Every structure is written in structure tokens, then in C-alpha cells.
Image (cartoon, rainbow over all chains, first blue to last red; front, side, top):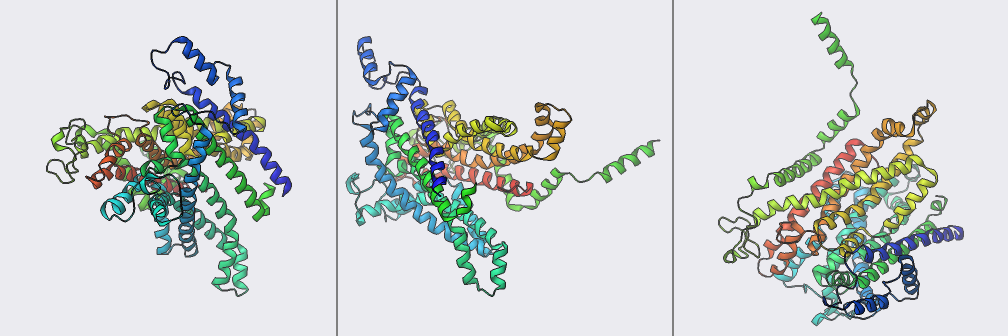
Length: 317
Length: 295
């Protein structure tokens, strides 16, 4: 187990380096001068050179990369060009809100998706199975930002049950666990939960169907075990993979929340990314993406380690 | 003489064993859901091609008098958008850019990703390891994030959108290509071909491609649905296609401000995205089970 974990961590380090290289490259693939958004069009050459030196754009690429990486490792992702505030603090403020949304959505999606998938796999080819499979296909095919709009239309515009935008009353970005804030969470979280729901339902259905066909289940049945007893064995065997899928989905939601956060004006990392894109605030864009991608890499690592702890057979791969 | 010729021909066709592809075709046609999905997808493609003939109005022509006319207005069966342009015509014309933006990246990624994956899979060894590790880096980004990161850095525009989506889809396709190629490479007939002195290029062309392209292609078709959602999503964010071009994601974005005035009108472009995405998804599922590919 220890060796497996160590090997898995060693494998993650080059990936992280690669990820940071991609994030670094983002600023440099973007057309035009990276300072164009803050420089007045009639700026003198001296001012331009001065700013280039301040931001370090006058050095060679490898030098810039390692300086940037070194600072990033110390938690300094530079300053936002638009606001001048440190990128790290902006991102950290937003990450909390995105986490609340993504975790809630994962829990809803995993519970419902797991239930659907389980029932579908257990009663294969019944009408429940067909219904669950249809729901799963709809879940992965629906453009979630549009689903968000439809939910807003139904539950905010027509019925007026839940607020349409923001994370709290008066556009507050500070989260609290009271009803006022939670009612803002309902629509975005339900919208977001549809993505993992479809995928979890598909995975669990396939898993359960596969496990039920294995010999040990026939053995259990031959031993005289009732369906309820068999069920416990199936759950135990399906759990590691299902949990792994859940972990990965959480990562996807954290990184992919931008569209839903835009629809609901949810003050998270996705919203921040949207701002960064429109103000052409490249340090903010770079920093936010770096943080989200690192979250995803680390989550993958944790999922792999936890999964192999639950199911030691995986360590041989 | 002529009689003998036909006899031989009938004999030849009668004895010809049913091929793999005719079996696939037969199984596919039995799958009613997949056939229906195929018809919808085909219909959408035809609609895009023949948009000028199908659309009742000019999609760019609007007057402020008709601004946000509700669904069911006379002469404007699906209403008019925020600039008074006919919604039905814009939805029909929208199929052109939306399908183009959704399908093209997958096609390009299919070509490039297959080439990378097959090369890495056939070469094996350190070439394989290095290629796959590089791809792993791109795998470390959630697909939505990578697409938005790249097109956010490049700025709005159709070409930038296509480019960012292509980059997103190359790694998963290459990974599938690599795994099927690695599996095929270990088979005995490849070894036999190598023993008989065939060059690597010949082996790949004659013995590998035919066996791996099918599964890779089916996998690629399953990505079209994701690609449609992502491509429209980019335009929804203001990246990708720019106004006044009709594109479903962009239409959804501009109509979003109207959800308190004409809520159901504002939701219409999303119905088209959903319809396209789900029909491609079901089509791809049908193809997969017809070709009996397990993934």
C-alpha cells in the first residue's frame, strides 16, 4: 500500500509540472501584448518597457516559467491586471463558493444516480431499467447551462419559489448555512447534479449487472441467501468503483462549473474565469485555471489511493 | 457460355459468407431507438445544408416592432428574437454553425488522435510511454476547463473555438486508439506479417488500420454530443461564434436577458442543442452495440 501510494505520487509530480507548463503557456499563446488591457493606446515606449520589466515579460520563456513556478509554489500567483489585487486571494475566495456548489451537486447526483443505476442493474430489462437508462442518456446529453435556464424559468420566473441568481441576499458573496443562502443554492446545485447523475447511473448499472453475473453470486444464491443478502454483497463489490467515479465527477464539476456559475451568477471560480476572459485579465485566468487543474490532479490521486485501499487487487496494475 | 457465366456468378454470391459489416448493418437496423436517432441527426444535417430553402425568412432581417414577439405570432410561428428576427429561421440557420462547430473538432481530433494513438500503440516501448505521459497532462484538465482556458486565452472567434475543442478531444481519442492498437499488435497475425518481412508502414496500413479504426470511430462519435454541448457553451460564454451570426449557444446567450419577458422563447435554442446532442448520443450507442464493442 505504501509503495503503491509513493509510486502514484511520484507519477503525479511530472503531471503537475506539465499542467503548470500548460497554464504558463496560456498567457503566451494569447495574441497581442499581455499588457494591452492596462496600457493606454498612446503609452510611451518607456512606460511599456517599464511595465514589461515589472511583470517580467522581458525575460526568456524558461526563465519566466521557473520564476512564475517558484512564486506559484509559495502561493503567489501574481496580481490581477484588472483590479491589481493578488490572484491567490481572489481565487481562494471563489473556490469556497464553487466547492459548496460542486459538493452539494455531487451528493445529490451520486445519491439519485446510484439509486437509479442500482435498481436498473438489479432488475435488468424491466421498465425501471429502461426508465433509468433513458434518464441516464438524457442526463449526459442535456446542455446543463440550458437546463439551468429552464429551471430558472419554471421555478423563479413562473413559480417564484427560488431566487434566480447570486449566492445570497443582496448579491452577497459570503456564504452562510441559513435558509436565505440555501434557497439560492437549490437551482444551481440541482442543475449541476444532472451531470454526475447520468454518469453514475450508467456506471452503477453496468457494475451491478456485471457483479450479478459472477459466479460468487450464483454461489451465494445456491447457499440459500435471499435477495437482501445478495444485495449487501453487490453493494460491497460495487462501492469502490462507484466512489471513484464520484470523486472524479466532483473534480469535473469543480473545473467545469463555469457555465452553470455564469447562468446563476454564482460567485465562484467559474464566474471569476468569466470575468478574467472578458477583461482579458491573463494572470487571473492563468491562476484560476492552475488552481482548478491542481485540485483535479490531487483529487485523482486521492481517489486512486482510496480506491486501491478499498480494493487491494488494483494495486497490482 | 453466357449461362455458365451467370451460374458461376450466382454460385459466387450465394457462397459468399455474410461479412462483418452486413451483420453490423442488420443489427443496427433492428435497434429502433438508434435508427430513430439516426434519422433525427440526419434530418438536422439536411436542415443545415438546405437552410436557405427551408427557412421561411431571412435570419438577419429584423425590425424593432417585432422585438420579442411571442411563440405563435402570425408569420413568426416561433416568435421573434431580441432584435425582431424570425426565431424559426434563425434556429434553422443556426444548425449550420452549431453543427459545424460541434462536429468539426471531433473529426479533426479523430484524424490526429488516431494517428498519434496508433503510432504510439504500434511503436510500444519508450515512444509509447512518452506520448502517453504527455497526453496525461491534458487529461489532467476537466474538458470544459481546458476548452475555456484555451479559447479564453486566444479570444473569441470561430477558428479559436474549433482549435480549443480539437485540443480537448485529441487526448481521449489518442488514448482509445493506443489501447486498441496495443491489443491488436500482440495478435499472432501481426507477428506473422512481421516475420514475413513486411515493413511497419505496410503492417499498420494492411493489418492494423482495418481492425482499429472501427472502435476508434465509434468512440469519436460518442464525443460529438459532448462537443456540441461544449461548442455551444463557448458561444454561450461569448467565446466562439460572434453576433449577429445565428448559432444556438450564442442565441441562448443573447436571449438570456429576455427570460423575464418571453421565458419560453429564450429557451428555444437550447432545445435544438439538446435534440442534436441526444440524437448523436443514441446513434453512437446504437453503433457501439451493433459493432459489439465493449468499453
